Length: 218
Image: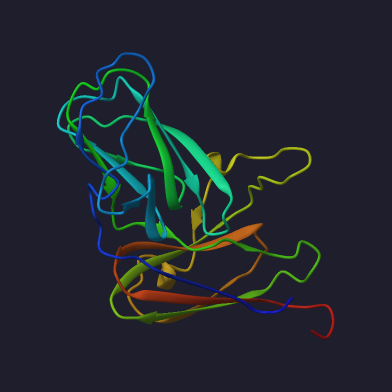
């Protein structure tokens, strides 16, 4: 398998960059108005794929929010999450754009929607039939805290597919690449289905190369 390199850098978090303060009260399922600084022509462009943060000044955990948008590949992605309780909750999936956010009923508190400092890189898919050893190198430019993660879940499995929002990602057993702040080398001793690099905080760039052993010449 040829080396695969992915890179991620997040702009400074903007907690109302998607929706400025609003309190939907029309009854039933309602769309939030996308009107923050990150929005152009009704679509929020987040710069790099990252988590979407929903914040309320009251208990909106009695409501659910459905976030829809696209990922780095342009695929449409969507998930439904329980609302916040006088704090913020954020999505499981990483969005490059947000095209719609709905709430399941009237809002209890004033809502804002934006981004936090967390986001995941594009996923790297490995070869199930190649040797299992995988070399990893993460290069950090600027300031960033990151974690290498992997999963055996597969949304494309022909028998037991797992929805992207339901996939379980496990942080590396090598603590050198868990909440790391500097460039590091690591490895996987077994072959996961996918790997990614999760930015936990910071606005620096993490460029990561994954190289799986091959049965033959590349």
